[in-house]
Image (cartoon, rainbow, N blue to C red; front, side, top):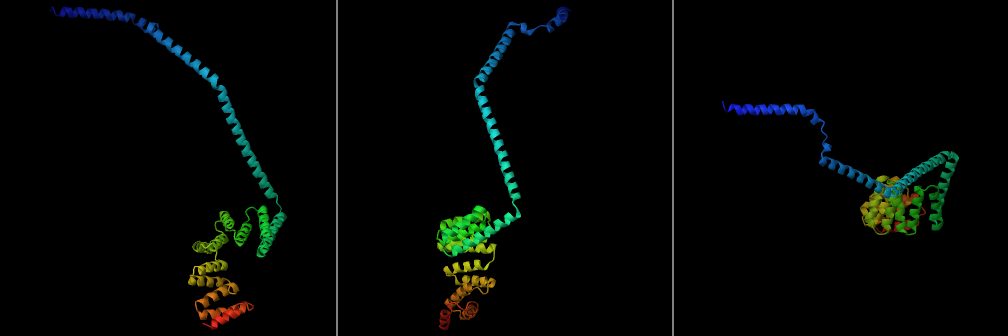
Length: 296
């Protein structure tokens, strides 16, 4: 029983404390923490730091704002220049397109005729070894039509005739940039390789020209390089293919007859001699061919 008395006293004290606190709770709820000295000091420091930061930012901006303005103006000018350039380019192409549309049919026909005439004049001058005048004709063609492949072919052949193989090669390679399937450009490169003694490359180039276009001249050119490589069988095969395209071409018959005599193929040789007499009776080599055949 004596043990219960202290417990009762403790409980009574606790009840009194709870009663007092409950009376004072509204006052505690409205208590301002910032009124504590430590809190006030922390808040003051925070405000000071914020003011300092704002001041530093203003100083930095005032110090570097001219630079920012210069850079901004530079980008603005560059953007304007670019926009103006694009606009001018667009106007330029519009004018060019309009100009091309305004070309009359008569003007187009006149220019085409001029190009044809210049090509013929250039070829005729080249045949006479008048290289300078021939070159002028081809240059004039290019001035009228900068991508005229015939003009570049003419120049390439002219440079080969002059043995200017470096310029000739560059010219034919440029043609292939304009048209990668130009058979005559490969044939031109084949001639250059053949003339400079690179027969393997020449053979490859002539074969490329044939792959693109089967013509008598390409087979004849391939036959010539095969003959230089002393590959007589391939030379004969390609000459026969050339003759299939042009049965009465005296140049093809002449070369095949020469090879046949050297190979002592009398049957083929007599047949070719007969055809050569029919298509080119004035050929001054006929008596020589007859003599050689009689000695077989």
